[in-house]
Length: 352
Image (cartoon, rainbow, N blue to C red):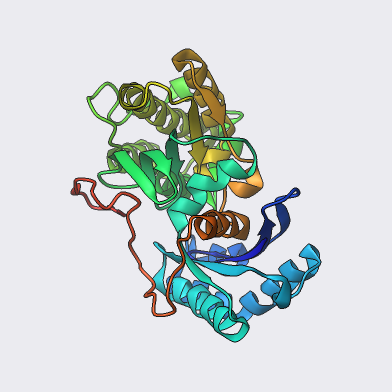
């Protein structure tokens, strides 16, 4: 079986073909829009949507060529149906529907977060249920993944996501965009203890996250230095910011491992996914946490952490096998919670 996956929820135009037989990933093509957005210091939704319109067709064509197949060989087409920047989501969903209609194929709308959640199963025999730390620019959640389309949320951000804290922090420090890699590079030569920053929510009950106060603390630290930072200042503040974000993520995840084990004593695996999962310091700390908790730890390779078509194609394949396909009247969703039964939380940056 071959499934084409299309991802256009943010600033990557991506398409991939996956199979249910090795090699699972037959192609994985990503066109990054960094050049288009870098002058603005962040993602501009209208610019992203127009770039998707320009680049999606050639990206799909290349994905099929690299996979060595044509449209007639496909068994289904999947696309991110949300959550995300709605203009971009509409572009991908419309393209996928057109292909499905023209070729008589099943259409599958994939929750972008489920794409991240299931990406670990592309690279390791991860069995349900497993504990998931999902960390990206727009989302920060702890979920128990009980099966395809079955999620139990343990925690979410009450304001901003970890990836946004990295991006805004890098902008404050004059390190450029995207912020996560820039902070990690600068932090490598910095000394975090020279400029201590708060570790949000650490020690509190529950598994929710908060990063808005940390961004404010960083801004105050920058202002105390007159806003003109030396290379040493940048490195030290970057190291401190990274340490604080990672410490907060580890503290919340440690709380979640207890809840996970209480609910599923036979559960064996901790998975991290999303763009922030590429951070090496976070991976090291999660490896130790999982070992101490008696859990296996799985992190997708870096190419599957950031947004990509392979994770959407794979989630589409898993849903296809479960008989979960969608009608062509599916409406793209700017917000789409993995766990619709989770208690709503209130905050300035909530993305359910």
